[in-house]
Every structure is written in C-alpha cells, then in structure tokens.
Length: 105
Image 1 (tube, rainbow, N blue to C red):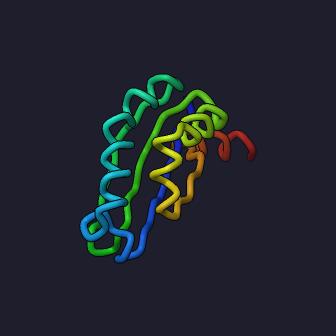
Image 2 (tube, rainbow, N blue to C red):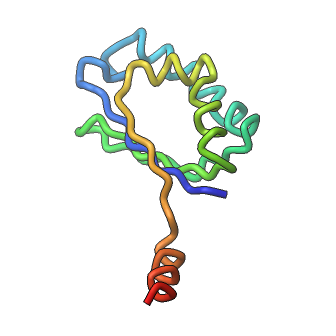
C-alpha cells in the first residue's frame, strides 16, 4: 500500500460555513466518501481541519496512484473537489527512506 498526503484549500468565500451550495455538495460527497474509497481499495487514515486557514490535510492508504485518481473521478468527489484547490503526494515512511539511504553508502 502507498501512503498519500493531500492538502486541500479554499477561499473564505468558498467556505462551506458561508456558502450553502458548497455545503450541500460537500455533505453529499462526505456521506459517500468512505463507501467510494472502499470501492477503490482506499483507506482514509485521517483528516485534519485548520478552520481559520481554510485548510484540510488528509492521509490515505491506496494500492496505487491510479486507484486514487479513480476515486477522485467519482462524480460526488469530483464535484466537491471542483470547489477546492488541492495537492496530493505519495509519501514514504521515514524508516524506509533512511534504510535506502544507508544502503546507498
């Protein structure tokens, strides 16, 4: 399994606290998020919100980058993410990275 980190941002005007349309789309997608993730073999490890910064950090485990792309292409997820700016990266455990570096010497 691969670990993915996602940083999601939105403007104050696009905050679901203030925008009813975005709130509706986000709640609809959120209610299906776990089920759709399982469909693609993805585990949502956790999510954290920094409300004053309009920022979320999500951590996922997935079998491949393609699985993450398929999940984000699901209509409710894609519609929700259309309101946000996001970056997603594959993250390697520090222990694995250190071991690789030690072997390279």
